[in-house]
Length: 466
Ligand code: FAD
Ligand code: NAD
Image 1 (cartoon, protein in one colour):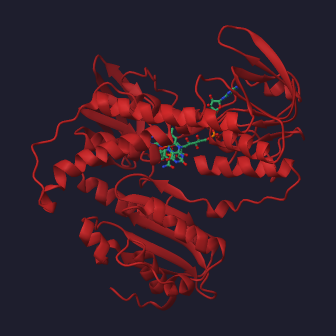
Image 2 (tube, rainbow, N blue to C red):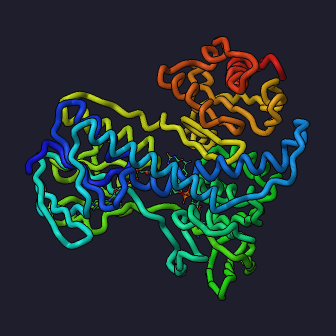
Image 3 (cartoon, rainbow, N blue to C red):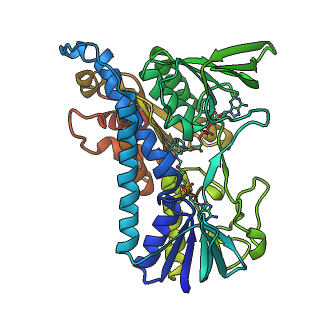
């Protein structure tokens, strides 16, 4: 069978690329080695983690916040297996939805491991060993990523686990030790903290979420600490050992002292690595870079001109929406269009509560680049909306160019930051100034008023409600 485009991998990068290519008149095949479509994001990433975050949030609210709203209930109990089952159902509905989209767009779905025979032929090998080969004028590699680990850790996937296992535990840990204070560590750490576990985050860098704006990391650590999460910052883990149902984690603190943590589960969340095993890249001549990512140029074209690569398997942020944008861009490019991605405007979100969201540059990046900027900050607690809901932690910070007033970065810690950040992304896409945002009428009372106020603080230094 011959196709215009073969997509290998059905995560958000792959399946969106397939849909867009089909919309543009291409004959498309997609290959997925797992039984369900949707990749990491749908099966063991974004969707199941958010389902558990939402369920655990309700539980936490019921225990800690209902009373302040004048609602008294008997002490709520967790049916953890039901919570996990609900999550599994949400995942299933979503994967079935993706299959529906493939059918609707006349995309041929092949189940099996895709591997290059040469630059235009891909062999698909099923679990039972049977195989078939299809031909593609263009091929898009969208094989995603897998959890990274540390060389001395033996991931037994029972007590010493990655995010994949943490999404389907049979019990709430008593003490979860999380290695890595990045996005996964803090999101899944939050889930189990809210459900009653003791949670200790051991982070190598001097702050959690090391790549985010320093103010944001500080505020986030403060609020998570208030929720009972413990942090061992600037601690380099040196060993992780399991003894029966116990896990012992040893680390060295910044003064060189050895510190021990004993728990019943250890979540290793130290990043993810590109996945290309079994893909047979050598048969097609596709090259990897020094970080084992598929090497691509600005058009996401690999070292072989008819083969493209997108998403977690190439450089850049490992985010579902980044993979999706790249999928659209490659499909449109192959259809003769001139698409474009502004990588500076890909928002980043952490689904703790309060949520964290950012777009554009951090203060540290602006300083490093020698850009003259001004910062306007507005505290969530000054908002009527926040007081009404009780979500008073956090702030919005707007960074703008000192001379032109153009918005260069927006950083939010606060309720619904994940959704709020898009106002900033739209403004920045249109190269708005802080004054532009400050002069836009925002609904009252809304959390979004904090963006207007922070923008006004950046523009003229005079927020109205502070
Ligand atoms: P993937 O989603 O990894 O999909 C790749 C697919 O390719 C997989 O299904 C794999 O089986 C298949 N494949 C690989 N090799 C082959 C082969 N040879 N043949 C056939 N098929 C193959 N990102 C966000 O933006 N927001 C979030 O809230 C978020 N939450 C996350 C939570 C967790 C716990 C994790 C682990 C990740 C999360 N991410 C989130 C990151 C997000 O999941 C990834 O950035 C995204 O899935 C990358 O998409 P992708 O299409 O590049 O690859
Ligand atoms: P991450 O890069 O966000 O965090 C890894 C953390 O581990 C870093 O803080 C790092 O300093 C720390 N670390 C590394 N080595 C260590 C060591 N030896 N000891 C202690 N700490 C160590 O990676 P992650 O949290 O594993 O997530 C992987 C990817 O998945 C990320 O790129 C992220 O973008 C994506 N993801 C996104 C979301 C979201 O968008 N909400 C959610 C989950 C995952």
